[in-house]
Image 1 (cartoon, rainbow, N blue to C red):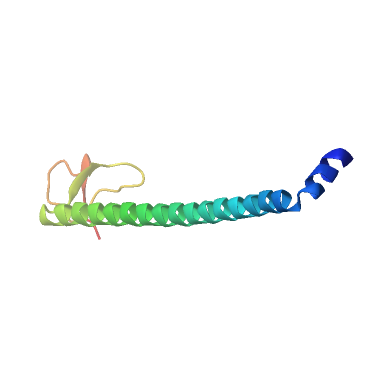
Image 2 (image 1 turned 135 degrees about the vertical axis):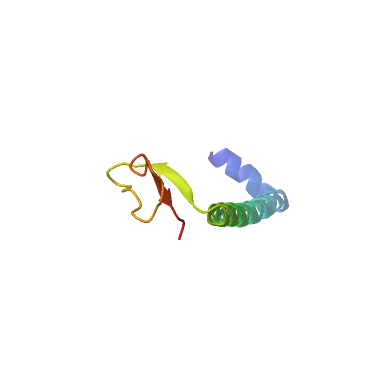
Length: 100
């Protein structure tokens, strides 16, 4: 190790050049890594935003379709009670669900 250091110290310009090259290369790689992380975060945010907007649009369209068709008939269960205002003979078998 001492021999190697002595040899590098014999040629200080070569040692300085290698050290400068290593520092520059490390700086470039660090900059590229940070830029890549920033781009990935931006891409992820944009993708999540587009998916959320598409989901919201689908929800609005579905509710609109239900509203213009007079609601949706669903089976009667413990959580969905029969609609008392529905004038259908077999009201206990189905219930009208109106979207809000």
